[in-house]
Amino acid sequence: MNLSRRLPIYLLIDVSESMAGPAMLAVEQGVKALVDSLKGDPMALETAYLSVITFSRKAEQVVPLTELMHFTPPKFSVRSGSSLGAALRLLMLSIKRDVVKTTATTKGDWRPLVFVLTDGQPTDDWERAAEEMRRANSPRVANLYAIGCGPDVDPAVLRRVADVSLMMTDLTPEGFRKFFLWLSASVQSASVKPDAEPGGLDRLPAGVQLADEDTEYDPTPRQVFLQARCQKTRKPYLMRFARRDRDGLYEAIAGHPLEHLETGSDAAQSSVSTGDLDGCPPCPFCDNPVASTCPCGTLLCTTQNPRDAIVCPTCRAELVSGPGGPAKIRRSMG
Image 1 (tube, rainbow, N blue to C red):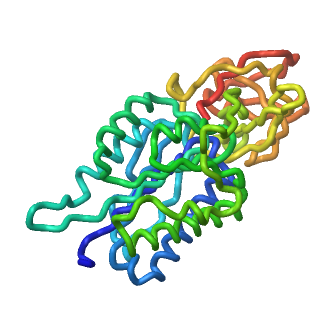
Image 2: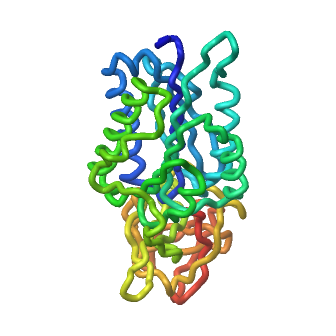
């Protein structure tokens, strides 16, 4: 085998808001563990080149196709939206640009491996992109794996996107660690037999299963996300609510710090009634236990003492505490 031929590996990572918190940290640690494991394999060290494409409201190639020895795992930034279609189009462009094709006189790169990790529903025109990918991949130019993380993923979407579609049910840090160990073993196997069909399916870790047609899917949104600002620090954060099966209400789960607060119609999915929400996640910066809305549209943390001053961290308006009641709040895209 000519070791100058590369094995391109593309990781497409969903960095939408539903990945905020422990899941995103587990993925970052998983990518690092993947790289460390591959660096210990002489064959992978000779052939593997990695690229990372992230997608939320937009898709971005945060790491170009890079030799394994020089690859540095990126830190992911959570944003709203899940533009799977944009990620697939960027992947096709990257493969066309980066992968050396075989000619009559020269052996090109090995067939790329592509792993798509997503935990929600696409928010863009993904179906057209999936069809374009199918046409571009016939005859096959890449081995594609799509991995759905959690119950919010429709298995039918995964099957439309990839040759092999999997579902992760164990979303704990340990579950992600085991998954990335499996992924590492799959890449190491591919580095030995680069032209083999997608494999490793007989060695799936616990908590990962094939997304076959019998996999159950509930289209009702299981989570609600609200973007807010800390009144004291003016920093943005994300409120997470999860649907409770017994009554359909969305229960407060956690508040996650955000690097950015996205505004405008692109960041909004729809509105939710406060009557459908049970509780309020405490502010992750100052622990304020409740929230209020400003006429400018900002959702901000507040205290429970009606005498405390309320100042909007966005427009700096001084607000007065008033009687509560059901109201519509703009949801983020998740």
